[in-house]
Length: 481
Ligand code: SAH
Ligand code: SF4
Ligand code: F3S
Image 1: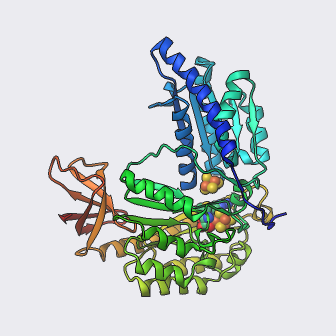
Image 2: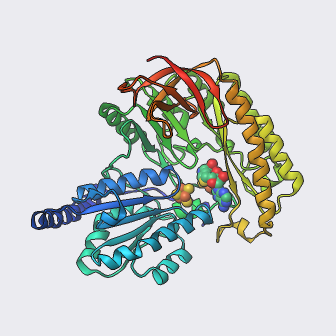
Image 3: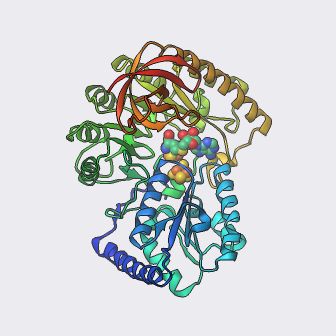
């Protein structure tokens, strides 16, 4: 049943210790191999999709490291390749399958290579069947809620060398605490606060492949962040498909604004971001907590999807454009400098020219700092895939017009930053120009600035006065830390 609320299954300490047993066994094999050959076995992880998948890949890396694998620079150096897939649009699936295809020759060269595919794509029956048939060199497939069982999956495969398929039915949701993590960044950390989605927007595959909404306990989340702070992390992103419904499945009565306030109340200076918010659940209380807490980044990612009430209803989004714009007005009243970003889908089935014009009008009115635009991609099994589809040229043409509108607004908004000073978390040297450093404002705007040679600013927060602006980049000068 679609909207049935299931009790979250917490993976028990016993289950985790079983996995630790497999981990030790594989680590022992890998140690013997290292002693005999002088070479360590290595893992390589290829990640597609959203931050949730990035966070999952950091857990895959953590488990691989505990099993005695080192990180490989390239797939060609690896003994274990994991492809963590996304199913949100056809393009993401095609890229994952094409990369998988490219790994075939590696398996031919090294028959001991283990290739695993996991993530959202494999939780769909049709994709699973296709990989089973057409990619025989793929050793194991496992769904998102099987992730914590990687040691067992690998052990079983290495013992029997038979292909394995550990697939959840999508709604077999669970929460596994205490899985080792190897983070990709030393300053910025993803922190999942919940998994799954209950919203069933009519275009979206996520609820089918990620299962029902389930929240981690506030204690587990706060403990994780406390540890990260002690390790030196200063930037956190709380992750969930709809963070605004955090805690509805818990009994403690803590909602998302309460959780955000509790995170901000932890010691030390840091910034907290969160994503994503669903407009139907964005509350006044959330805005008040953001406004009152300097540690809460003044950035709000609020997906609009469409500027037409008829299309929004067909998408099953459960808000109107005027309700949505009202949230933005309230936000900006409380936090005038807040950065607002959004997601928009063009070419949803049945979207008329007038309805698309309403999206352009909403974008003009909302004046976003950035939008993530997507051409509608039919997903098998979702209601919208059954509706009458628009021709490809219409979708492409609308996409181009939306980008044109947004680029003009972004340039205007960026030019208005000239003369203002922002605190910037320095990410490192600018990509194109090594004499420059680059960092981001709280709202994620990319700022470049010259810095004296040898200045080790990376990871620090500096004040930068903006001197020049383009559509996607700002330039400035450092005023000090
Ligand atoms: N939970 C988040 C979104 C996750 S998916 C939320 O509700 O905001 C990220 C974005 O991908 C969505 O906001 C949507 O704009 C886009 N998207 C999802 N399904 C899509 C599809 N079938 N075709 C095109 N874009 C899609
Ligand atoms: Fe998909 Fe909607 Fe859930 Fe976001 S809220 S993940 S768009 S179903
Ligand atoms: Fe893709 Fe799964 Fe995220 S479908 S967008 S990786 S939740």
